[in-house]
Length: 303
Image (cartoon, rainbow, N blue to C red; front, side):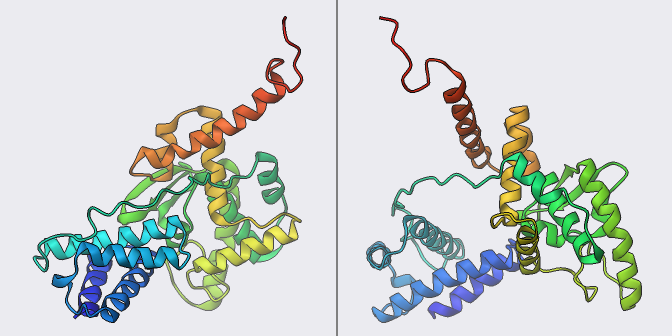
């Protein structure tokens, strides 16, 4: 009974809410953990689950060493699932509604400085794969795309003349983002090889970025290729999300336009984007500490 309702809920998230496979796996993992705990404690129907059961489950996970951030995610999954059961009339109260998540330190996203980005991207690629990899990296940084978004791009989403790209983000929402000149040039180079690859494989696909077999490239392949690119360039490990964070930080640092950065990143809530103001303030603080005569250690008093 417990597992059956979870399957219905996951199917709803996939077909109606159109959540990504990654998000669906997270919900599945959390809810299966909850159902296993409830089953072991003689709870076989969601109607019989109460607030005490959820609190006991969360406390057990906390004692097991689960981090505050993971506890927050676990509680979020529980609340959303029970809210769905409530809407469907399967339960009368949401037992997770009043349980407060533990606070965790807000971690700032890791961003690269502009010089490091330049070291990563300023090279002349050799061969089809390197040309593709450079185009991917340039676009990630140029337009602040998520890894999942760049994987889903089709050729017609790109307008080279207007230097724009239509991106399908979370919740299947679309937005238009600008594409920088260097990224446009790298994309032009890649599209030539892309067309030749499709002809040689005698296949057709709308996907913008392809693997060597002529199929849409996977997220994992992009991660691995970026790691290899960093290794070749003698750089520390850089992941696709760091390029997105770097894009946001650098644009905000130069423009100060939080709303524009929010739109380009595809954040529904500006509060999510505001974390970059903290990142930007860290940069300003360092400049201040180095430049201001009264901020330096050992500054003389005016007594």
